[in-house]
Image 1 (cartoon, each protein chain N blue to C red):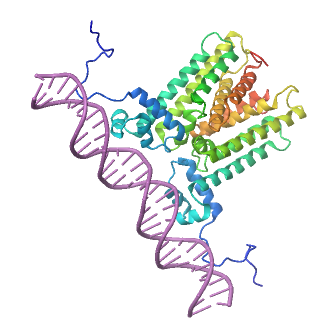
Image 2: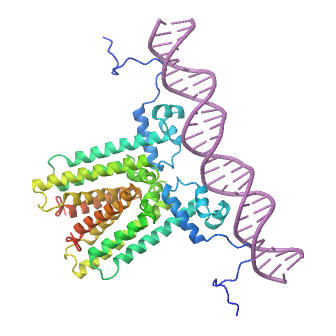
Length: 213
Length: 213
DNA sequence: GTTTTTTTATAACGGATGTTATAAATATGC
DNA sequence: GCATATTTATAACATCCGTTATAAAAAAAC
């Protein structure tokens, strides 16, 4: 019995696409990550994705739209990772450390080379003159703040924090810790040192250490 | 009585320079600040400084050397401002707030437009692929950490902090607060909100507020 | 005033940039 | 097999990029 292909729609009429848009976006992100938006010519994107410039334009519009898509996808992935780390019944300090560990796994590529945060390493540079990028950065930062604040609020309700603790202020310090790690990773800091920094920050933020120390 | 010109050396032989290298570097910095290193063509630098490309090359070498000089000068100025804020007999929380206020006065131009930190807004983007810029960023971050740590150490000696306080860890949070402010300023945050963030962070870092609240 | 020295302005250089026109290639529908 | 539809690869495009050659301009030295 000849089974249908897994795609729901019928095969389109013309020559089939030779690229996978999802995979291409991922590789484009990797390329922007290294040299930034202004610093990355479209040739490099074409080489990294294996797509020709016309295919890139057909798939994404233009360089700017492609970058915005990469930026949006990065926010989705990292915010999801943070939320997952903060969710669940883990103790507060453990949850925070998990969030920073998740971030570090983004900041260091699989080969171990430090590239830092995509947002802070590439979007922040464009944010002043590019309103769309600035808007994306501001919205993402707000989301991160909100996720941390919600977790601290929960912690206070659970009795993990003193009743007079300020969830908003603690969230700012938690975000700040994320930011400083992102910056330091791009400046060449070693992963172990950044983990240590995160641990020191978590210890101070939570009042008392959770694990060792 | 004909007084000598203030310059010590005798007038040089050829046609006199029409530019002031110091002022030009300042204007070049302002230009890089907005659109980053990769995003700023030399034409814009020439227009901002009023210098022709050959004069720029004679004065600074090339675009890369010019940027490095701007970066070095920025570090000098901001680190000096931080040190000055932290020096003296001011209470700890007041000294910290002064340091953040000094930073904010860099992050917002005289016309009030937000541009954030020059390092985080322009150098961090290049740091991954440019070893010289990365080195400058890393060194500057280390200095900032050190200045904060020294102040916290002094505070502990003076009894402003509990005897078991960890100056290194506190310095990391103080630096992180600086970094998060720098990022948010470039993402369009208002100055008053950033001042508020700084105040919240200082309150947490110092244990108890110094001024109001 | 002529020579020498340095800086200036103009324009050029080769190559890179983002984007698009053109035509060949590869699929479906009949 | 032929017409139709879509994507591909190649190359062109106008412009911009960082950098430098060239010659005029402006000062001191003699």
